[in-house]
Length: 451
Image (cartoon, rainbow, N blue to C red; front, side, top):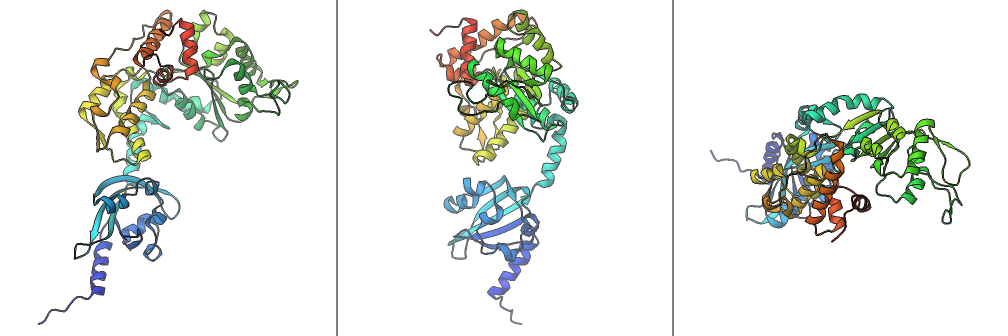
């Protein structure tokens, strides 16, 4: 009996049946980037019917950021290089974000001619939910940690957030004080209000007062119109005062009045305005030590120190480093579109051996530096900054518990940072996680002179 020939139409029907039996989403494109096939799993994951997408540009259907940064299918079509298990986020038909893992390959006809490309993708929503469930014990908002010291903070943070008490956050530069302040705001009763941050150390004293309290038209020569201050902008929400230890005595007096009476006067005004804000303050300095030296008002310190949170430096919680590295690798993978998936064992050891005077912010900068240089799937020691090399390692000064040594230790850290960068204040300030003007003031306070 003669076998029945399969027609092209029959071939297509068989292909469609095979594709529809696959659990992963599959679609193909022609050389013009238009969709030619779209299987049943693809319909379920995206919410689009096959008849709606065939003939459409794939970027109009998937709406992923990566489509415009580094389209995987274009990359494969151009280089013939397949992509395997790249994690990206797409928007489905309901505009909901869906995490998927994609793989791409070139598509050729029987003659070996390139006719397009194929992409398979898998819904990772369940896996992501499981990851969140597993990591929930280590996180609060975007705070990544599993150290015991931070765990204690995370345990009380929801209670702190739900109150309206003033909070004082103490921690070295770069430990994530603003991240904690944001987490407090986002889980507080004021979360629908604004979160306004002010770096008290980054603004000159002459500008800081007008920034905080605003001014009225005609208050000074250049005041052509009324300008609301940060207290006004934060009404109904939270005002975060970073580096509050750098406030001048005059501004300290005015801030004390706000905390006591819940009102303030804009510059040039004859009437008071209500301050409906929650204050969260932060400092890398020990304010009680500044009080003893007469540099910070004692009454203001006690007004601020209602709820105190002490954030440990990164060198004292090295168990968090692998978690943080993984967090930043995923962050920069999404940001750059690079297919970097891991850090080599030697590079991780180098990262673990370093003491991070700039704390978490410095670690983030280190990994961003590595992403710029890394062209493969793994970050190696050659991609890390030079100051992380063993010859440049140094042991960070350890706290003794005696507040009298803190200025000495701060001076030592600043001098070492300046020396590493040839006394370039901009680069040293960046490593230390502070504004250039703040660094300059600290140099004057400690009597540090540029050679």
